[in-house]
Image (cartoon, rainbow, N blue to C red; front, side, top):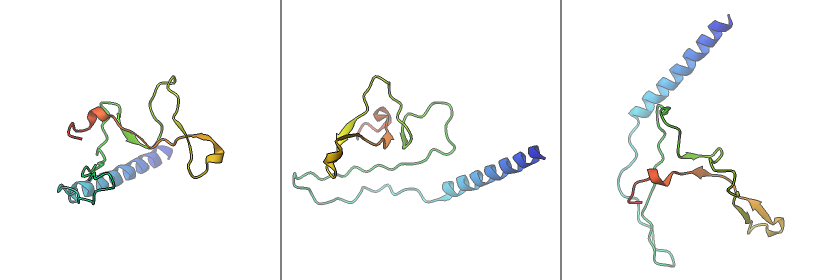
Amino acid sequence: MLGFLILVAGTLAFTFWYVKRQRAAQAPAAPTEAPMRVQPDETGVVETVSVVLRRQIPPRFDEPPRSWLGGLPRMPDRIAWPRSVSSADPKKGERPLRFVAQIACEDLPREL
């Protein structure tokens, strides 16, 4: 009985994954036109670079991931975790910064 339940759960999970993948493949592509220009800031700089994050479907298992959002960083133990004093509450002193993403810059386009 347990084997049957595992088979049904696996079949349902695969079906949902497959349908989601098909819908994503049929979805319109992200716009490729240049991003809107914004007004220059006080330094006169206008930023026109944009980044589109796309999920790799199906996930690649032939090589370990080199970039990701959230989770934990992959870094040697000898590197000290960055810390900072909050401008909103400096009385708390230095606190560890939050991890947001690990980006392998080598994988980014050279023109960035």
